[in-house]
Image 1: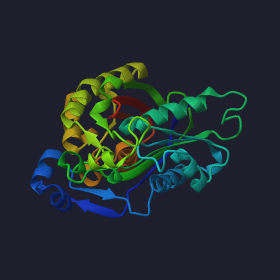
Image 2: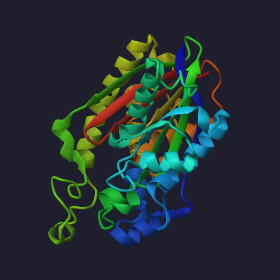
Image 3: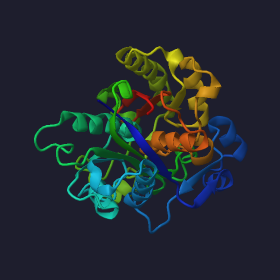
Length: 334
């Protein structure tokens, strides 16, 4: 028995923020934003919405797509780096609203790599079994959600970051599939020496919030985009090669490629670097920007809705995120 994807869903908030608005905030022209990033619009959550609200909408859509009753979900993993609050975990709020009685529920913060980390973790729990495991209790499904709301932590005067990011959520239901289908192989990594490349310095125990912190904008997101791109180009191909070797799959056998949508130009460059033809690589960053942990599942769900994956198709999910994290997973669709 394997563990595969049984259903997918996504949610994008209604408020659309175009490049004209970003230009007003930053002084960067729309032409500059288009040329450098390829991002045309992004979505921002309403003031009344929290990250869990986005996650709940995506989760419900994935459950419908999988024709899965909430009572069958034994594991809920929510990948986010913008939680509703420091504690409890955002997963607790999602569990309550979706109605997942008695499920294990926890958050994963691997930043933009969180969804891939979450899929591997949830699948491992389902496979672990044991007398008190979720499958033994009749809850043989896992729900993995990636949700982030970077609009709340953006420095709107920083054109290097506010041009890129949007809000959203994506989700997948995992469950048993026949041998030879589902997750075929994966590779995960982190290099904590580079943790400073992507961060929000303040708000935790290392640097508590204070008036001085707010004055220095240390409560807001920051990123060394050039260094992140260099890391992605060096590490993601290694993750993909290792994942493919573990799965016994040649890269030429991969039917669809879902890369983290850092921005359109980064996806295009990384796809060329990996040797994948344009027709196999999905892009959503032009419409939604970089939605962090939601990026991969949103793109997967949109791709599947546009052109449904067929049984036997091989799908690559690959990502890079703060930490610095990276990961890849290969799935044979069932």
